[in-house]
Length: 164
View (cartoon, rainbow, N blue to C red):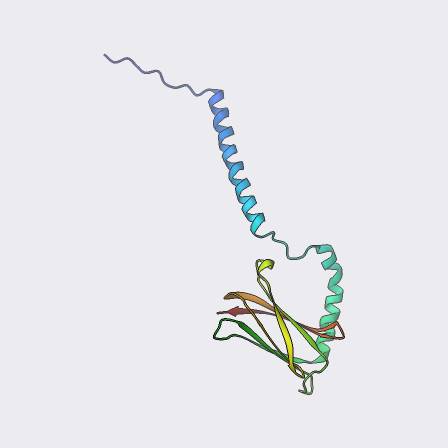
């Protein structure tokens, strides 16, 4: 003859401990995920969206002035045999003459992490011609080219490029 076993009774204490344990695990996992997310990428493209909004009219006016110039600015981005990224830029005016009196700056901006950006130091090789090199990893980048005259930006180009 077997003695009947006493079944476990589910009490309020058991339910409370199960709920506290469940939510404790959820909060711990969330804390780990938030820490990992904020330490790798803050998700912020601009430090102040208010200031960026105020600058919008200036950006529109600059784009209209740039369009009125009717310049033809072309660039060639490639890798050489040593793996360096080479950028050649040519700027010509509406009459297909080289644009003189310019300085140029270029940057390879990583689409997700500003810390991986590369500045390409450009030197003038001829009137309206610029050449520069940088060390950049393969992948998708945004190439930002700025042309200046007397320290005032007169041209900006933003292009999505893929380095192989």
